[in-house]
Length: 290
Ligand code: GLU
Image 1 (cartoon, helix red, strand yellow):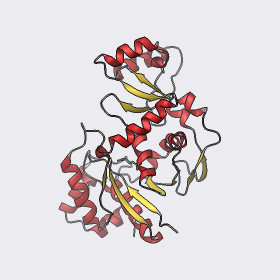
Image 2 (cartoon, rainbow, N blue to C red):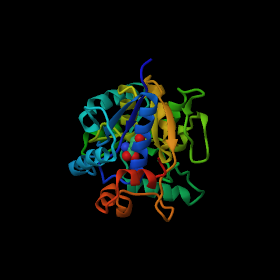
Image 3 (cartoon, protein in one colour):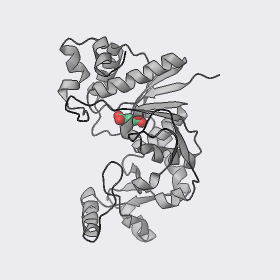
Image 4 (tube, rainbow, N blue to C red):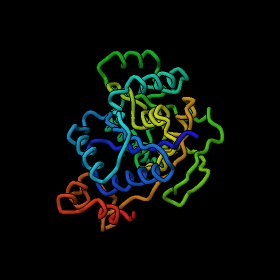
């Protein structure tokens, strides 16, 4: 039997905190318990927010925690060709369209619609993209693409959903509302998600799906904040003919006041805790692991 494959996939856009430690340690422990492999993936597609010093700190902090991972580490910024190929495949299926509105313009469109009735929000609370650019005439589209206008490439969710029937994923952990087992996929809740941008041929959703498949990941262990996004990932796997891993979403570590941790909260940053004298065993205890 091939050993199970796990991955910890942080973005180097800040220092790791207790929440990352919990996720990394869960992956590490599960890989050890199951005789599996642990991969580390650096999700650095956003060149404006990712920095080499944060990446170096990820290696240092994980090693300090006692975590061992396989090398070479996959850095997403080095694999844009693989994501572009997946994007081309979705484009060939007629499921991708360019949208030229800025964030501010989308907010304005939503505000206008909201004057009559509430406008739907995605599971993260952002208003759904109204889909205006979907009906742009081809000539106008071509003109805008060849101009200097920035654009996002969006998934035509309605068309994509027509290609999936009774899709589910296997949840071995637990969703935020206690969901377990066979979870029906509901990507419609996210609307026409962004798959790529003019200057970046990928997005979080697209690259995570491509990489999990290319790296043979069999069990995705990650925080419950990504539970709902799994619907989009499962849909993309289906459209791209990629295998589906099992998912094990875990509880989120909160700070003493019950707030979600962020990369700027110094009190829970691994480096700060270490500087204050904490040992790896203290970190395990702080996140509720033995
Ligand atoms: N890179 C993502 C993050 O930092 C995690 C991706 C995943 O586990 O699917 O939150």
